[in-house]
Image (cartoon, rainbow, N blue to C red; front, side, top):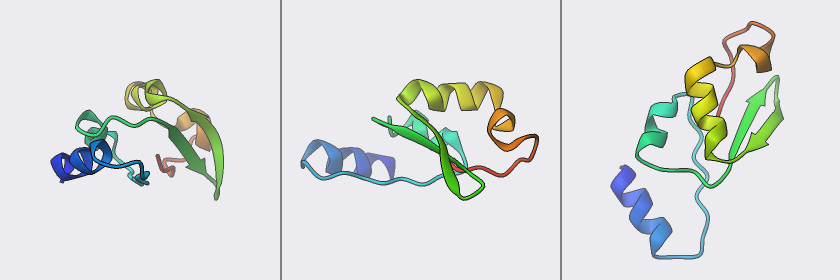
Length: 71
């Protein structure tokens, strides 16, 4: 799947919205922008480094200790 998404991104000017709970896919599809959703709203946005931070530290600072969040 990641190969197809990357090929599509390279061959066009259209965007791709990828919603995931697992940052592992981002090892294969490098994002331009990352948005963290918690409590039904965007709580932080950033570049690919934000996904790296989430992988290292989890979502606790965004959810007040709850495990629910989406990248």
